[in-house]
Structure formats: structure tokens, C-alpha cells
Length: 539
Image (tube, rainbow, N blue to C red; front, top):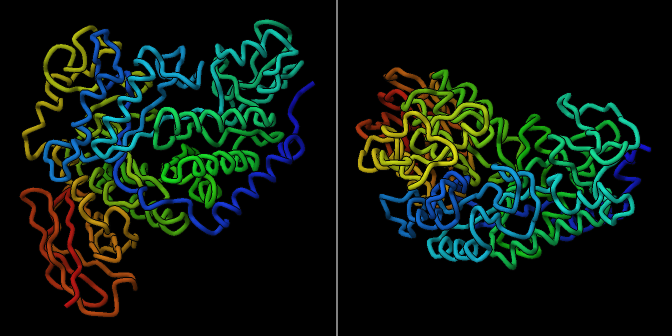
């Protein structure tokens, strides 16, 4: 018989618990965000970042040895990116190269090192002011996980209810039309796995599953010392009849887990992956579930604006997110480990530079995928998006002294950290400058956002404002110098005289304000694919 009971029928107690906890912790109108949720987070695929033992596979010791590249603890450093957070793609035990099919939620994959190596990473990161968040995969386990193996071979197993089974093939396609019910290799029955047969979905209709996932997060917070989690594939946690994503039960599970994490570690940070759907759908995951979610619409709008040389998609996506989502609780980025790399899409350093500028000036915890800052390329399939970090032109791209698990990209000898390190005009140093600029100004780290209207369609204009300062930012996505640009100001800046002091411009590209009054700013020549930032000062 198809075990497809609705969440409200199967687990009313958990749904009620989630609502009660949400009211107690956030009052439903408050934000779970804390003041520490700012800065830039650097996404690392440990397998591809740095190999510490020469076996061709990146590991935790290799990552530790390169932490100073991410942040050396010196806020004035010119050799550190200045990121205050790292997100590690899955590091728990797994049978795959990518780690999203977990076989043991409580221990580090031995290919990456030991549990003590991970604790040493935490200590080394914290000493530099770097928070560490890890990938958390709550939707599914590996088919090799002992839980699933027990449930597969023994219908009386206590883990049987941890997965979804059917005596007949439901012939129910998955959310994007894929095969989601898979034939058991043991008996005449089927199990549900939304991604593929090797990753059966966990059944949150069983209270024991939710309790176990709370234990997992508590363990990594208390025993391993992490600062938070990136939640993988959140739309698919709970199925309700033919609704296979974005269900009420999914929101209930996220409330319980989000509140449990905040109770265990009040300064923790959680960010969710919800890559499909509009900003309106994303809005349903607020206010009381996870702290933040990746702003996929803004990411695609930013990259497209840089590709097309037109600010329209950036302006539209940022306006919509700013209007419909809680301030500071949507995370900007460009691309990640599932998408063709930014440089593969844009193909041009100047376009990549303005895309980075546009993204890093937005509020929320911003995410940078490893290698993006040096312009690494990488198309589909996924292995090509996750190739070894290009550190130098030496053997193994400086990633390993052995044979790398995956060959570096073809341009690694010319495009690497060493080649860009001392070049002021390099993409790497552009990222360094902008991340440090962001870190140094409260308006850019935690300030409110207002989207202005520029007179030229190639130009976007935004204002970031904190109690201490106000900064006007313009971005020319186009490939032509613009002689003059007018910016019509939103009411937040109106009502009094002010002047503009140049704060930042791309090297050799001076930014000049010609005039400013209570409603309009006029800028002089604006260089192609450039960023200008001005401090707004009252007269």
C-alpha cells in the first residue's frame, strides 16, 4: 500500500510543535537574524581546494594550510581575501566524490581527514576570525547508509518508517518529471528518492527522523564546533499527496530545525538552498525558519546584467528581493557548485569584475565560490565545475604533489593565484579590495538598501545606509564610457542638502560627482564596467 499520507494527518504533533516553537522564539514577527550575520562567506569544496598529503585529493590539513589566503586575521591585509566565513561542501562520510549521499552523519569522511583534523580546522579558523558552516543534507541519505540498509532488508526494522515505501509502483513522477520511485533490489516493492536511486528520501512523517536530525545538528555545533549550516535541497523535505515541494510540512520541519539550532547556538547561522521558484515562493520560507536563503533570482539577474551590458535584470531582481524579503536575510552570490562558473558564462574579465562589484555591494551574507575570484572556468557536468583550485603554474597547479583526482582546467598554468597575487589590476585583487571595503563600512555590511533610478539603462544605482553612514553606489554594466549619469533619489535621501565624497573607484577610473541636491545626483564620466562609491555627507 502506498505510504503517502499527508503531513497534517501523519504528524500533527510535530506541526503543532513547530508553530509553538516559532511563536516562542521569534514571535512570528521578529527576525532570527543576529548582528553577526554579515560579511562574505567563501564556499570550499574540500576535495578540490588543497591536498595536504599528496594523494591527489584535497583534505582538511590542506585547507588549514591555506586559511591565510581566505583570511589571515589582519583587517588591513592586502594578501587575504578578508572573508569572515567558509562554507564547506559535504565533509561527512559518503560513498561518492561529492558527498551528498551521506553514510554517517556524525563523522568526517576519512578521505578528508579525521574528526580531530576538523576540530583543528575550527580552532585555526576561529583564531583568524573565520566562522565555519558545513553542508547539512537533511532530505536524503545514501542508499548505503546503515539506516536504509536495515530498512531495505528487514520490513520489521525500526528504520523502516524512516523512508517511504510502496508495494506497487506509484508511477508518480518527481517534481521535474523524473523517476522518483525506485525498484527495491531485495523484494517486490518501491522506495522514494527524488534525486536518484542512490539517495532515498528520509521520511519526516516519522517523528524519529526529525529527532535524529536535531541530534545531528546539535552534535556538530557542540562536539565539532561549527558555527552553522547550509541546508541542502530544502524544498523537497516533505511530500503531501501530489505536492512534492514547498509543502506546509517542509516549512514545519525547517521551523523545528532552525529553532533547535538557534537554541543550541544563539550566534549560529543557517542558510537554505531553494533554487527553484520565484521570490514570492522564497518569501514563504520567512520569517521564522532558517536565517537566510540564497538569492538565486538576484544571482542570475546580476550575471545576466554583466553578460548583456545592461542593468535591467540586476535592477529588477534587486528591487524585487529588497521589497519582498526581510532585510539582510537573503544571500547574494554569482554561481555555485551546481552551475556553470561565472567566467564560463561571461568569458570576459571585465564583465566578471563588474558582476563581482554588483554582488558584493548587496546586503546579507555574500557567498563567493572558490576560484571565482581568479576567474576559474567550469562548465557542466558537475565534476568540471568542481576542479582543483589553481594555486600556481607548478606541477599539479599547486593543488597537490601527486596526481589530482580531477585534472585542472586547461588554463591553469596562466590563470592562478600566484599569477594574479601581485598584479593590482587582477581579478583576485579586485575581490580583495571590495571585500575589505565592505568589511570596513557598516553601511555595506549591515546597512539598509534602497534602489535608485539612473538615467542610463546600463547603469544601476543603489544606496546603502546604516546609522553611521550613507553610501551611494553606481555600477556601469556597459562597455562604453558614459559622459553623464543622473540618479533620481528615493525619499530616504531627500529632505536636506548633502554632498558626495568619493569613497571608492576601480583603479585608474576616477569617479566625479558634478552636482547633488535633495532629489537628484549628477555624476561625470562613468567608465565602462566600473564601480563608483560615494560617501553621502550632510552640508
